[in-house]
Amino acid sequence: MDELDAYSLTVSTVAEAVTPHVASLRIARGRETGTGSGVLFSSDGLLLTNAHVVGKGRHGTAEFSDGRETAFDVVGVDPLSDLAVLRADSAVSGTAVLGDADQLVVGQLVVAVGHPLGLAASVTAGVVSALGRSLPTSTGRATRVIEDVIQTDAALNPGNSGGALANGRGEVVGINTAVAGTGLGLAVPVNSTTRRIIDTLLAEGRVRRGYLGLVGAPAPVPTEIAEHYQRRKGLRLAEVVPGSPAALAGLRRGDLVLSVGRQPVQDAQGIQRMLFAESIGTSLPVTVLRNGAMVDVVAIPAELTGH
Image 1 (cartoon, rainbow, N blue to C red):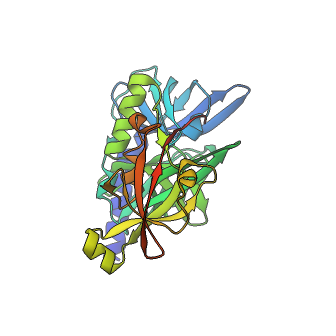
Image 2: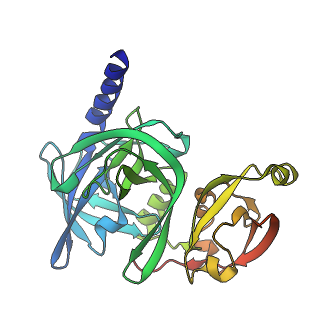
Image 3: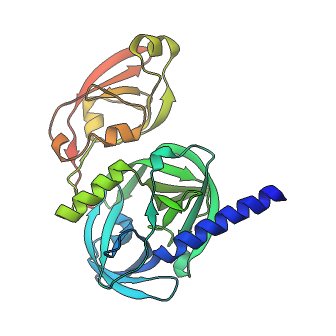
């Protein structure tokens, strides 16, 4: 009973700290209105949400749990990370605290706050189920891969997208992005890469991103290889998007990626950090372990286009 009380106290404390800074969003998309959630993270009215929540919309309205309502403009959208930055027209007071998802561990308590199904703010809790996941998504004919997502069993429903995933200290460590199945939710991590994306969106309105088209998860390197090459973990490819730069380079499902750009890779984030504007159209050497043999290929990242 004491453990349950401690758990309940943590969840309720986090909910009290985070909920006031999570808004319900209504976004004008031509003749349609999109809905979702957004997290207020800056005293000058900046909100963080999902790119797929914004779509091609440029304006909308944010409503907070205390009844405050403000119009906002879309500052910028980055489809590859599924992140978008908005700017509210009205002055705001109090903001969410952004944390560092790189400090998360599997099994850690997390709390999701959002506006599911268009309802008032709701709170669910769970644990970090896995880290470093990749999420393939399609919009029309375009296929993209959202890298390094957090997997959680905190219940998420339509409308939670763009809402906050917070740790036990009330710091926002993720932006809820998708419901992948029963008992399975995904969130974009808030970390140094996210902050770089935010800064670029504020400065330029978009992020020029290279992409390879890989879907994978961290996996151990066989002992003999680990000892010889000093690589304990790599990225096991679960899928290579057809027609993508990775596929054209000859990478295959089941390959264990050890290095990209001659830098050791242990997870999807290690690759994502290399795929900003300067990587587009340049040769990127990739070393993988395939059927017990080391294989070197050269991939040329393409620029992500479309939503």
